[in-house]
Image (cartoon, rainbow, N blue to C red):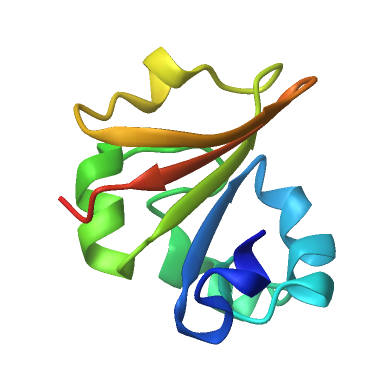
Length: 100
C-alpha cells in the first residue's frame, strides 16, 4: 500500500521499533528506526519506550504513517486527535497521520 501511495516521499514510524528492520527492507520511504547503537540517542523520544507525545514525534520526524501491533500499543495509547485508519488486519494497523 505505502509503496503505491507516495512511497519514497513518505516517513513511517513503527511500534514496536523492532518491526523497523523488515519495513526498511520492503518500504521505499524512510522508517523511523536505527540499526546502530550510536544512533539510538537520536531516537530517544521513542526508544526504548515512547517518552514524548506522539503529536510532537510526528512533527519532529515528519511522520506520515504509523504502523503498529495492537498487542504492543493501542490506538488510544498513541493518543492522536486526528488520524485515519488505512488498514486494520489481524493485530496490525496502518494509521495515516494528519501531519499535526
